[in-house]
Length: 286
Image 1 (spheres, rainbow, N blue to C red):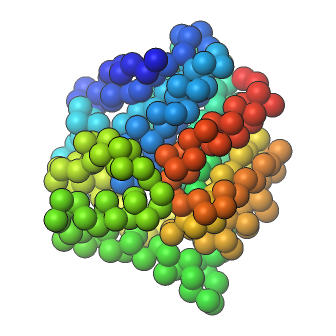
Image 2 (image 1 turned 30 degrees about the vertical axis):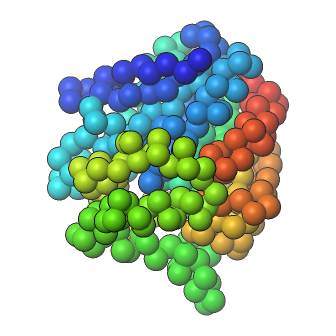
């Protein structure tokens, strides 16, 4: 059964976290990406908890109402602060300091790739949904066909001051349409909109992009056992970036392609994603 735990990492930063499983079980920390919320991992939080893991999925900075700095203060949303949030939440849930399992989707995957790069010894495994390795992503962006650059065009659009109102206009038509086109069920869309479907939360989510611009943090080859799950109908990640990821993993690597899968596989194919993840965690115990 999923419960909500409030975790204060610093004054003014209180994160609402979906948690389940035994308190002494190996930690599985799951970081969501743009346009969704901690509810992206509901199925995985429950299924992995039944297998004995301590599962946790926070609403991240700006998505959590209790951890939402001024949305016009873009430096407050810089990646170093986002990384610090994830590490502090992990430390609170994993006081023994044992290695833990890290999962990331989209922006949460960007954080996960970097945590794996900077502190590989702290992780037992890495699971990535949709977002390719940063080196593969940058290589795909540079290809002359321009496909990945086109798929990533929203990164630049999100820098426009009008992006927030545009995303929420007509009952969040843009966001609803995108989630639906990527196979997110209606009830899951409503759960995510309960978090991000208001102006202040949307501006906070966009502040992640505005703090970084279009630059991607450099990382080296990943030295943590990695499971990468990608849907071949992902509207933002093309095949070149996805298939190129394996060249940048210096550890055991498993690449799973979901036919007709969109950008949010854990919502679209919850049972399949949970099974992939559980197998990966079992092969790489903490």
